[in-house]
Length: 261
Image (cartoon, rainbow, N blue to C red; front, side):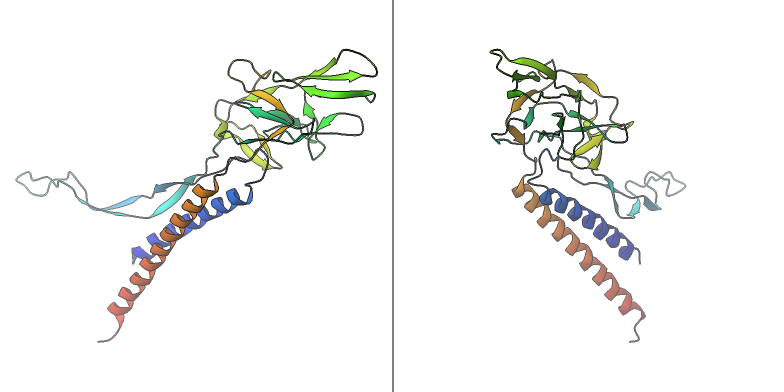
């Protein structure tokens, strides 16, 4: 009975939906996290009586026909890159992006990754790095005898060196944009890498046209809405239960058809 296979595809689709919701909820407090959703598509149809075909020599045409679907599949799991809430941290090396753009990070294998997580640290050489110790690109190194690190909205990094009365500019943070943000590939550690679907990065200074600005001593929270996730979880659970009931009903019908009277 085809109903068994069709309902099973529905259960598998909702199982993946619950997995995505689970990952979203687990990362509610992850800095710069962008939630995912599941998009579904119906599968191929079998035509028992094709709509629009001639039904008789007199020229009668089927107005609707008979089609039986094959179930459902997960078509995509796009990531929603909306702005998360900005919260104060009172830490001078924390930087949040307000608007469009990603920080660039140099990976150990030479690749460039992109992140919204601005929870930066200083390594032993005074270089601005991520929590995993990977350097921000372009590299910014804070002199050992400096104080008063500041990052303005346009990404200009300044410190006061020694006993100098005026601050010194030591670097410029930049942001990268992509034509298709949903085409970025997540690799964990709050990082993304470009793909053929995302397009090449377009790099500019914060505050330039089309780019966001920076806010020092703040971090961007994940854009997960707990109420919406709970609502989606309940809907997925109900859909899973309905498909399981279809399987039980189909099994009972098959049993009734083969059981002796």
